[in-house]
Picture 1 (spheres, rainbow over the protein chains, first blue to last red):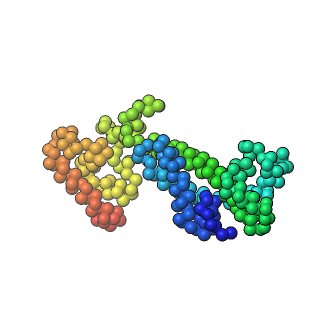
Picture 2 (picture 1 turned 90 degrees about the horizontal axis):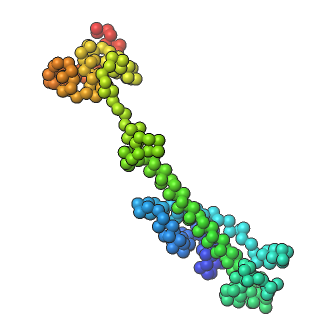
Picture 3 (picture 1 turned 60 degrees about the horizontal axis):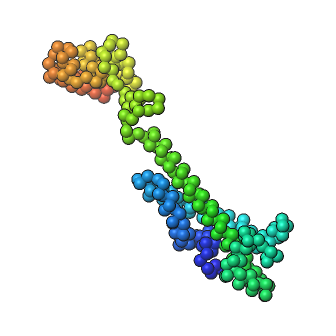
Length: 84
Length: 184
């Protein structure tokens, strides 16, 4: 599949399938505000360590996230009409 | 089917985006494989964005809690303040600091405390005076002046005796116990 846009999904595919570090960085960058907010609750001395710890774990998650488990639109519509 | 999608359904939110709606409409009009793939990709991306964002947010929160717990545990085990009262009573310094034998008694001897055989043998070959000085100096951690006062000698003679005793120990250890017993 040719990835043309810069959606989160497209970036995740790039990061996983092509080991694209810039895509990986971009994903992390998009969650930067959330990371920054969670740093506020820890002590001043630990902020940088925690930031590194979170980012390290994010890299692990991005690389290992199961992209195949996402439902296709067809699956989803079938499921909806069954339950409805 | 899509028209009937309720306002809180995933589908409704998906099609609420004009870009996605355009893709959906072009697929309905021209149901080609390309249009379908395009639509499916957009949908997967949409679902991914939601799921991933939720997952990451929860993880970040969990990680920072987890980190703080670890940090607190570390600080608890590596106290910087030792005279803070503990739950169990007393302070950390009471638990940590080993108080040297400050009462001179005849029950504790330097030789009993030594686990190194060569060193023990060497010390056992010193004379009683030298043994006593080493005992006072290293077991009871007395200063030379204190030992001198105890023994009624001058500080200089205690220092010299100690120096000689240590030299002898070194000599005996370097020579080894076997040769030594031959010599004596």
